Length: 168
Image (tube, rainbow, N blue to C red):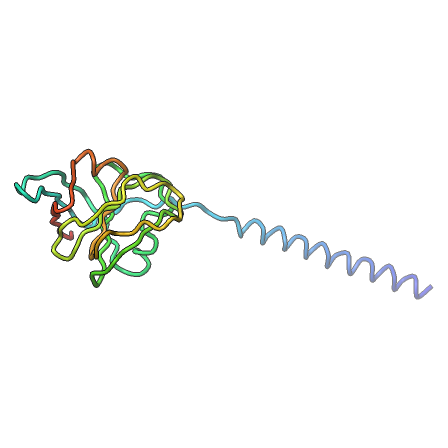
């Protein structure tokens, strides 16, 4: 009779442990769900684009500034859109050949490369969402401005045009 009692006790003991473990597993599943957070624009400055030959104002933008490793690597990733009068300005510590890509960027952009004198040196227009193709500058740049695709044409921007910006 004793072996039967041991088997029954063991059955109930291991059964309750298994039930507790499966309950813990469910709890872990519930708490490990990924929460989506919408990244929103944060105005950190203002930028003016001007025609080089006449100094006439072409556009004024509210800008978000990316000037540290995390923000320059993340850029506009994980965002669904950006307003027409907004842009992201990347400020690098040195002037060098730059290359950007659109990994995890959900909308098309114009990428404007600007040298240390704040003069536009090249463009990558209509960069396609989620594309990891390298989009290089044609000349060394210290600043890079990302705006909605088509805006550089709408403003009739050209190489040699200039920008001025201020931080809030």
